[in-house]
Length: 79
Image (cartoon, rainbow, N blue to C red; front, side, top):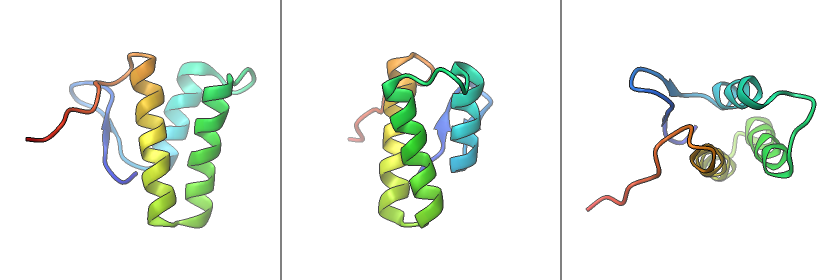
């Protein structure tokens, strides 16, 4: 991940694998929705390429997906 994603007061997703494992544990492996499948694809592509750009995109996509499903807090603007 380009940044850890908090999922509770005491736990965060740190790696791309953490993100994929959490997503699959919450929503299952066999009936991936369009958004879930897209998010898993982004995580997989980032892991395969190792590109900082791909990792950043995957992190943002996972964060957006989890926020939409109320599994993490929305990103707050710094200021």
